[in-house]
Image (cartoon, rainbow, N blue to C red; front, top):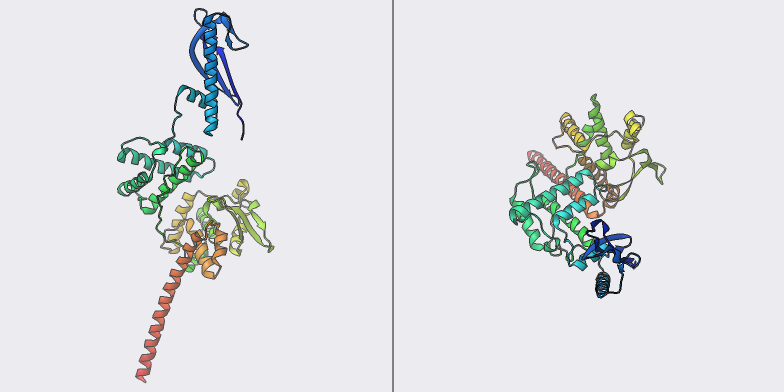
Length: 418
């Protein structure tokens, strides 16, 4: 355990002197950091011993003052020892607060959101931080509209608070009319709260975890992906409009690598390596989970890299591929879907789902391998795609059953005619 260095001295604040007298202050120093306290006494400047930090003289008044100063010193040392015993952070300010009987400010929910966002502003993507700010706004609305308060201490968070928030969200209007607050959206907001509460628990700002009895439940959503026919239609079409051709190539590249937008965006020539098979691999780290990912490149992905390796924009930015904002890409992909007759709402993330389903699982790649290629931390996440494939298999078998039935009927009709 690291031992803190404690120093306590008394001195005169001469800039506040009046009529030859100056107020006496105590200075607490812990590990080089200071805090000052006025002891509400003053003394003739000529009667102060600057070396000893005490009053000088032999009169009863001087003796009484020095005894009082030593009592203050003893009480401050006692405050230091109390903090040690309670294993609380020992700072000059903490000793001062304990000495003065001032309770340290308790952390609140809104303060915690601000602390989290400040601490994570260089670690999280801007979009992710925006999501946390949206979550903060919903909790502010809950506090004001439902609980009639502007903030709440962390110690007051409990199971009822979470249940109340869930109910409030179900009954409230969404901040974005285009994105209604359905069950999974509400759970995502609560999930973000859980992350910042975990930060408070680690900092020992809260003693009990309010999530102990609360269970988050997510409804399994279907993963939209392209069929082989839809992917082929997109691959087959070239565009004279440069932005659409870039968007198409970036999308197809993701369809054959499974990389999310941000991970494709961040690729540089250094991420292109030679694997144990002597072929090209992408070696990177998933931004979302910080998981290392190594992907053997399929010929179609290599062809796109080769196409752009001498492109001026790629060379200037030191990237592996041209880059657009995710918002622009998704806008261009909607145009591409119209051109190719794809009825689905095409977004860049559908490419990742297409890689998982149409490109890999449908073609017999084991789910464990697909999970590794996608950089999933839990194979249960990958199993969602396997269920999609099972549904497709079921539909195909239904079609086969109908064809077999039709074949039997036709055969029966022919035999009857004969």
